[in-house]
Every structure is written in structure tokens, then in C-alpha cells.
Image (tube, rainbow, N blue to C red; front, top):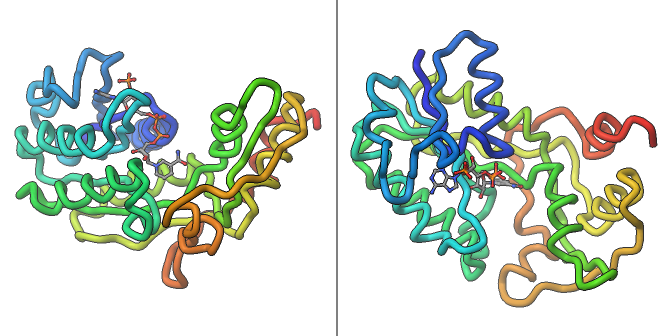
Length: 245
Ligand SMILES: NC(=O)c1ccc[n+]([C@@H]2O[C@H](COP(=O)([O-])OP(=O)(O)OC[C@H]3O[C@@H](n4cnc5c(N)ncnc54)[C@H](OP(=O)(O)O)[C@@H]3O)[C@@H](O)[C@H]2O)c1
């Protein structure tokens, strides 16, 4: 198959790219660093010539409005009329859409549904790398804050494989959610990451506001019973990434 991966240089997209290449597919990566701008549409239609499926693993940056970003990306892809669009979304993004990132993911799903393209949407939980992101984003001077959150993080390489599985399988609409093997506390994940990576250890738990913060604390962002699960635990991922500790 010829598979295009929007955001194929990112955390999830690069893993989908590796898996698709390992399975012998022809892969086209859509990213600004590859001369394709998914928001303005520059280079998209030409890059999607002859593709059998597009995986949308793109992600908005700090300066982007997530809703405008994802709606623009889907519009740019739909202009090329690919036979199948696979969208990587976030588990229960509809339960906390007062949070701009989640509003953006919901807008992405709606745009895919209304694009006229045959689609598959899969929602996944946070990646194990989320712990490192929170360590960096939660820094105020030397102090590190982490939101209280019940999460069931998943290995991003398993997410990459799931995206390729779905591209190969053909359009199904809403596919099963995909989460990690067990529930974790985000605060404890951030502490374990900081210790294992040697960057520090001291993390102060905080409550995020609004329905997003409540959803984080109350476990509303955990996958439901009918979700599929990856195998690698957060501890296994940490041990693989920092084997010396
Ligand atoms: N991180 C998580 O825990 C998590 C969990 C579940 C779902 N998700 C969702 O999965 C998606 C991917 O997440 P990620 O963490 O893998 O993202 P990421 O590492 O930030 O990667 C974003 C990708 O989008 C590309 N991109 C950004 N703006 C672009 C533009 N205007 N034109 C073309 N390409 C553009 C980037 O490439 P260039 O910079 O080269 O353009 C990069 O390849 C996101 O939508 C996120 O919401 C994330």
C-alpha cells in the first residue's frame, strides 16, 4: 500500500512511519520539515497523489489554535480525496472539551466525519512520553508541578502499529479506543521519570481547573471497558529508555 502520514515526523507519526516501512509499504511523510504545510495546504494534494490511505497524526504547536489547526489539516487532506483517512484522537476528548487541546481533537473528529472521505477514528490515551512533557511544561523556575490525573498511558510505538493496522484494514468509522495495560498516577509517573532520567525528583501535585481538571482527577479520561490495550507498562518503558537506572 501507499500510506501517507500527516505528522510523520512527530512522536506517534514517526512510529507509524517506521512500522509502515517495516511492513513494506510505500510511505509519504507530510510535515513542514518535508516541505508540506497541512494548515495552508501547500504541497498536500501533490504529495497525496496515488495514496491508498492517509494517517493523520499531526499535532498543533503552542502558537496554533488547536480547533483551527485540526479543521484546516482535515480540509487540506480532504481536498486530495484520498480513499481512506485514519485519525489519531484522544480518549474521552468529548468529556473535557473546555480544554482547547481536547476541543481541537473533537473538532478534528467532526471534520473527518463530515469530510466526505471514508474514515477511521481511533482514540488513544496519553503516551508514556507524557511524563517528560509534563516535567518540562510544569516547570516554574526550579520547581516542577504536575496535575493530579488518573491515566492509563500507552507506548507510542504500539500506537504507531495500531494506526498502520487500521490503515491496512480499511475504513470502519469509529474504531475501538486504545490504551495502555494499567492505570497510573500522572504525578508518580512524572516523579519516576525525573528520577530515572536524572533531571530531578521533586514534583508538586496541583489540581487543574474546570471540567478538564475534574475529568483528570475523577478518572473520566481513562479508557472504557471495551477499549483495546497495549502491552508495555510505563515502568517497562522507563526501564527501556533509561536502562542504567
Ligand atoms: N502526546 C500524547 O500523549 C497524545 C496522546 C493521544 C493522542 N495524541 C494526539 O496525537 C497527535 C500526535 O501527537 P504527537 O505527540 O505525536 O505530536 P508531535 O510529536 O507534536 O508531532 C506533531 C507533528 O505534526 C507536524 N506538523 C505540525 N504542524 C504542521 C503543519 N502546519 N504542517 C505539516 N505538519 C505539521 C509536525 O511536523 P513539522 O514540525 O515538521 O511540521 C510533527 O510531525 C496530536 O494531535 C495529539 O493531540 C497525543
